[in-house]
Image (tube, rainbow over all chains, first blue to last red; front, top):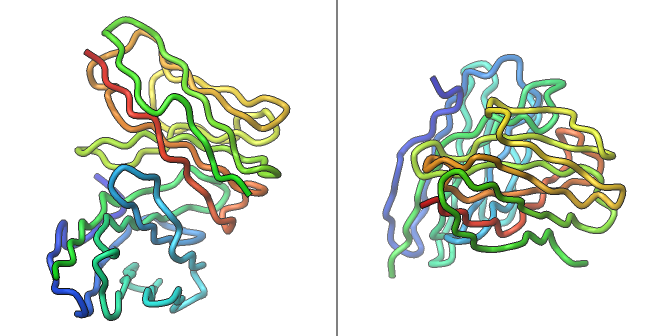
Length: 113
Length: 114
């Protein structure tokens, strides 16, 4: 069973609207949680990295939150733009595992005019 | 600063053949990781190299191997290709390989096995 589950699998929103993507994980203990954005045909790009002691991290219109007690994270996108259309991937790493990362299967976001 | 480069970008092979993929990290980065991405499984970790040593390995058969050179460039080899090996292979580099480091991904090599 995958240790990182993301929801929804896909999402369509209108340009200018906000949205929230969810990530639940069972990796324990964990050292950090990352959110990546992957445009079609390109490699993932890091949006945020949070350690277990951090609750929130922002990168422009992207804000990630983390609740280590419930093992949940969310990525909130504010005032969406057409360029936000992409796959968003949640990644959790365990201590001492380096980049042996646990990946969610991603949420595919489509922003329409 | 140039980003992570991968060659070739696209590759078509037949079952039973072998393939070698190349990754050049960002200058100064010493850690290189490889990942396989498929629509069904998403991204899966293959292995990570740091200073020419494999530090971590994912759950892939021995047909998947890699190496890193003294200039941090890395190669990944897949022998006896199977249809299921068709995927996007991504490499990523980071400065020191610490989990808190930001990883920078290349554009990937799209491998199709016929």
